[in-house]
Length: 357
Image 1 (spheres, rainbow, N blue to C red):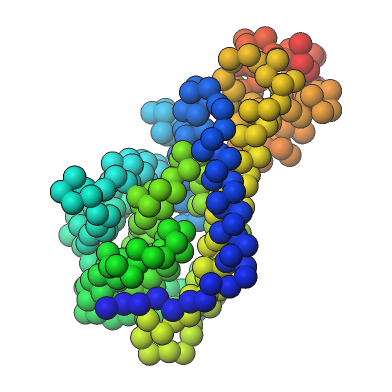
Image 2 (image 1 turned 90 degrees about the vertical axis):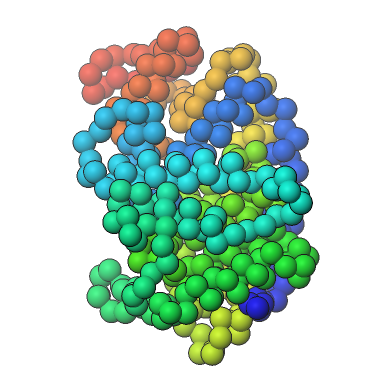
């Protein structure tokens, strides 16, 4: 049976402490239900965008939001399909996050893994490769140099490696491992085994999210660790590769400490960001006084806060604070803020600025 090798370093302890502190504040913050629903929807959009963008999907956050809302956009069919697929993956995770009714144990199955992969690559891979372990050797290449950066295990070893890992994940030993570390281990092991011909990164991250959610760390589903990975994709892949390039014989001999430090850092940073936002919306009476029970998106909150701090916002300024979104998306947000009587427009065409009412 697989057994992970790692040390609970000072860095891991530091980040786990931050994760626990942020989790406590987020889960107990007094937010109106409409805000909570909005936070969850925005986390879905960010997860879908960054979870696919890191694999080369060309859609920006605004385009992803439009696709998930059912709007038509001009983009590659594959990019659109990957976005729709990842939403279905998140729906599956949400359904599977509760223990089974039979014995109330947190059983993780091969069927779960294959289902996540099938949903991930639906209409992207041929049906005979969707939700099926690979039967051929694959390699990971540097997209710029063409050099092989990682050669996963042979195809005939995949099923046994997955089975050994799931045996550990469902074992008594794993019950004593902190859920965040368990999720990080899951991410690395599945990425290393590379069980499929394509979609391994998305499947590995999704299965790790399933572990977090089932073990009580969904944190109201307000966060997206995929965003942290995608913000510095080079570091993400290099950290995975550092472990995979260790000169050891078996998977159990690979020391995962460096990877787990990175994984915990990512979740700690993402939850810290969410915590600060939740605290601000809970305690900022000035903004509350302006909005009452009006629900603002994360983009709109940033725009209002910027205008409060600087007096106005123009197109050059909003591009600097909302880099991931198109002008059309931001203009729709500003038009909505005008309808809600929070801001007003001064001037016209390209020289227009927006100020608080």
